[in-house]
Length: 291
Image (tube, rainbow, N blue to C red; front, side, top):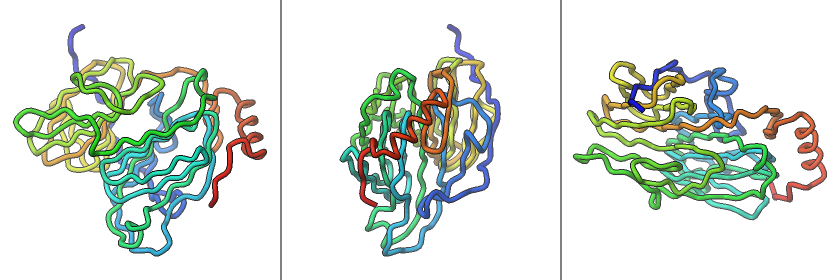
């Protein structure tokens, strides 16, 4: 198959921010911010870089349920602690990733890690909701911690930077996160003037989020900090050149193409499955987690 550039459909500015709990000030790029097709990614909340003042009481989000999908939290600045009703807990620091499979149902809470909270400072995070196919929605919950130190990466030539592979496979470097469908999720850390080449099937839903710096995509499309580059289903290759030192989140995935029924923290296929999720939550089937 000949290599052709994947066409840029839109370069999107961050939407007006809103608070999630009292610890996350996020711009939602989809599904509510922009009506773009990103299946199997259902939601992208982006906490653009923000200074939090010191606090003796950690800010965050209290106990809440999820069913039918996975939450993926990527840390760039700050630190977030997690606890869930399956007994998992952990802290993610800059460069780390937390991949929680809610699947059949889980309760969890996320909040600023205690030491970070007391000191305050810059905070920057991405959270993705990754949908699960119908056949996997009721599997057992699980938790994957991908630390920055252990993350697989591909070193670009001439010390121009690296591509950290969270999930998927880049030039033979395989990401440590296991996924239920085909997903490519990378952090590109590029020095000024560095170029990176990516290839992905034309039918995959694909986007880039510029975390830091500014870039030129496919030789002529420019994007800068906090913008999302959304691609059309045309072409199979992307080039990125860093105009200055840059960090770019790349996400691309094979669409599941199944019906979606969503209500609050539940992501299912049919309305009756949502009713069942609410009933199961109300009757304690998601377990117990202390506030």
